[in-house]
Length: 138
Image 1 (cartoon, one colour):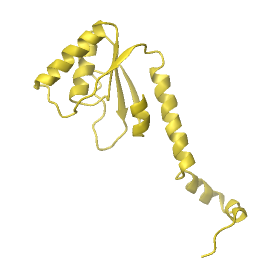
Image 2 (cartoon, helix red, strand yellow):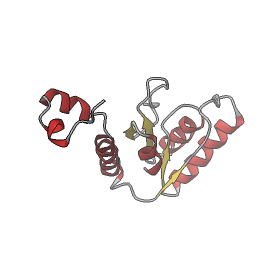
Image 3 (cartoon, helix red, strand yellow):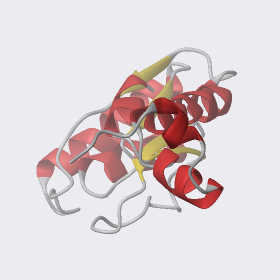
Image 4 (tube, one colour):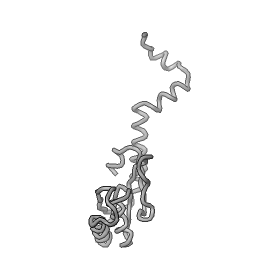
């Protein structure tokens, strides 16, 4: 098969070029950069914060859930915001503890059809990402 020249590629129909571009690496880089900008804009005025990491599978009757609520409450009372992945389980517990103490509660979620959305009753602010690398950096 003959390889297409650069001139032939440029002269292809515009619809072919636009459809192809959205599936290229430069387009993906632009989307990831956009997520970083949105996330940093959302969190820019936050101030000092503590991140809580933990399982989404912990139920509200688990002792670890109560421990996360208590710890997050103490963190918020000390003047720090609480940041989690915005999901259920330990993340919900930490966000709940911060809210109960009147503190800032932030969930950095993933836009994913397979996972439930953020726990709205406990999150004060939400930064959402499609790409995991952007979420982890926030």
